[in-house]
Every structure is written in structure tokens, then in C-alpha cells.
Image (cartoon, rainbow, N blue to C red; front, side, top):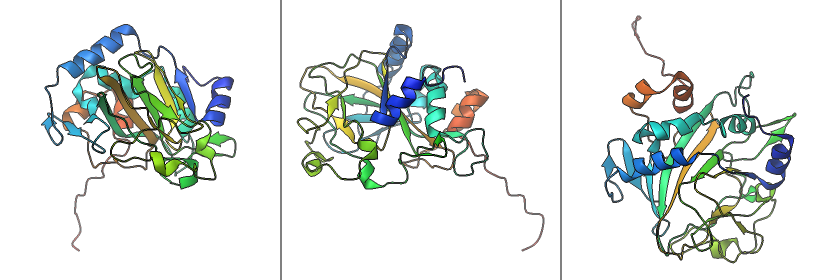
Length: 277
């Protein structure tokens, strides 16, 4: 591995469920990504721009541009970006082994999110839920996490900007937070004010790596302007696309072999009938 997690990274990821990767992207990379987003015309929910799809989880959590790795080379570079890919491989686990439950990585969702004043996303996930898809697991000396996310800030996210909020350690929680239902995902919901949660402030180019089991959401944006982030969700190769998207033939054609393996880890087996049924 070129950039594996340090012993401290491993300890903190296990303890807290997340790592903050400062200056994961260069200013030039951030500028290229923002220019790529600026080149996409205004879209409404349900619109397609090429293979990029405008989507929303709810009513007040902002607009998502799904399949954002279809938007050009700056977004393709993030598939296996050296600032995080070896850490992702380590925490998802299974690569280079005979573990048939894991194996190569797979990105099941990737998006850009735009959040405006008054918008936020409510609390979701947590170790109490027992969900298999995003489970946190360490067993027999290695990590086997179901989903590990990279959230990249493309704008500075400070006080009042609607930063991501997490409850450290909640990926291993046995009990639901007593106030979970007051803050869970719903129109108008946010994680503001829930005891135990912290808001992650980031500079453009910073990346938040976290296991999806971690209880998380966001503060409500109160400042003017728009928060811009990218999210790439990594898991084992047996996963499937969360929303039923598929990579375009054009994307697969231009990707490097390493990136193509993450975007489409399992090749379809062509059926050539040569016997009568």
C-alpha cells in the first residue's frame, strides 16, 4: 500500500468511526471539480444531464447529482485517489484474500450534494440498527466493514455552513440514542442540539472518511451561499448499486483498469447457448 492507515489512524477509526483527512485534495484539484460542477446546467429532481441524474433523498436536504463520476476526468480521479484509497481498502477489507464475502472494492453510490440556507439532513444510521449493508466489523485481526464513505468538501464548511454532524463511537452502539426520533431524517430535520454529536468543520479539499454505521447527518445551513460536497461510498464487490444506476459504456471505456475494477468489479458472463434445453 502506498498510503496505508497509520497505527493512530487505525486506533481512531476503531474508537470514533471516522478520520478527518486534512488537505486530501490540492487547490488545483478542488478548482477542477468545482469547474466541472459549474459546467453542469441547473437541474431539477429527475433531470438527466448525460449520465448524471438529479436526485433528492427528501424535501429539505439539498439536491444530489448522482453518478457524478460520469461528469469528467476530475471526478474519475477520485475513484482511487491516493489520499484515501489504501485506507478504504484496509477498512473495507478482504482484498487479496480468499474471503468470498468481500474481495475487490465497489462504489455503490457517488454524488455531489448542494445544500442551501435552511437545508439539512437528519440523523440516520447507528450500530443499534444492525444493518448488514453498512455494518462495522473487526474480526480475526482485520476490518470487514460493509460501507466506508469519503465525503469531500469543495467549499469551506465552518460555523453556520451546515457541516456534517456525527456521534463518535455510535458505530458500535448497542442502544439507540434516546433522542434519535427527534432528529431522524424527515422534512426540516437536522442533527443540531442532540447530545453527543459533533459538527465536523472542513476546509475545501479536506475529506471525511467514516464507516456508514456511524450515526450521522448535518447541521442546518444558516449562512448565505451553497455548501458543496462529494460523497463516494465504498463497499465489497458483492454489493449492488443503491439506486439501480449503472456505469455508462463510455465511462468504462475511458477508465484505467484499476478504476474500472472498482466501478464494475464483476464482469457479466456472456451466455452463448450451445446445447438445446
